[in-house]
Image 1 (cartoon, one colour):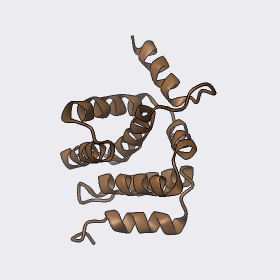
Image 2: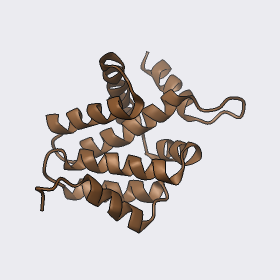
Image 3: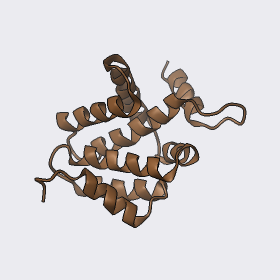
Image 4: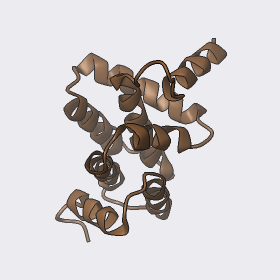
Length: 152
């Protein structure tokens, strides 16, 4: 059963010359990256998960059931993934610069959700920004837009 799920996920992420990437693969890739930020520190908080769910719901205009399903699928996929390249390369192929910057901002919102930015989260954000080919100035701007006003 697990092998069949992994095969299914691989077919979603791996590009096909015959068909365009459906919207749900972009949703899954976005969910996985935000969940990876959530998993980067020692303890994932309820605030981080709530932030992921809120962003997925708003960004993709999903109902509560769809958000729950996407979140569960994203968490499972993140746990099974051996690297992030498959997700970032999909986003690089399918999204423009502004959309990728928005995703970086979403990831920062997740990192800041528990009011603590760990060294692991910071490192992961730098790595993902490089994989998404985001400039340093756009990286900093996204980070500042996502940072809550009452955090130092």
